[in-house]
Image (cartoon, rainbow, N blue to C red):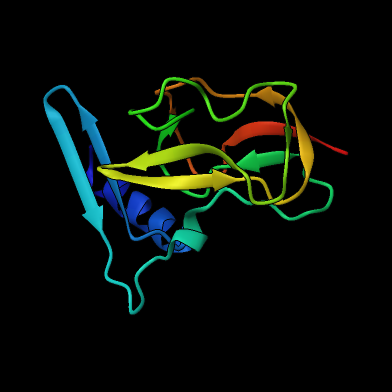
Length: 132
């Protein structure tokens, strides 16, 4: 990876309001962290879209999607489930941290768009919702 590519990544991190990114491939690791006057809060990384025209719940950060906590067997939700506002839909794993992904409104889960253990990017749709 060139220094120009690293600079571009750093710019994207800044523009997205993230505090860092970690990339790992066989034989390659890159960890970029940015100092911030205030630490990112859980609210800033929750996948909670506006309540209007966007029918998707999207990732507000980079991480690995978890349909349930590793200590639990069943997924929090599946396609066809009706959920309440604020209900836990899944988790976004960032390192050792598990961040909640919640519904912003009462709705029906039309489709789960990612699979257990899938790496997700900033803004990637995780769930397609249907208003009740």
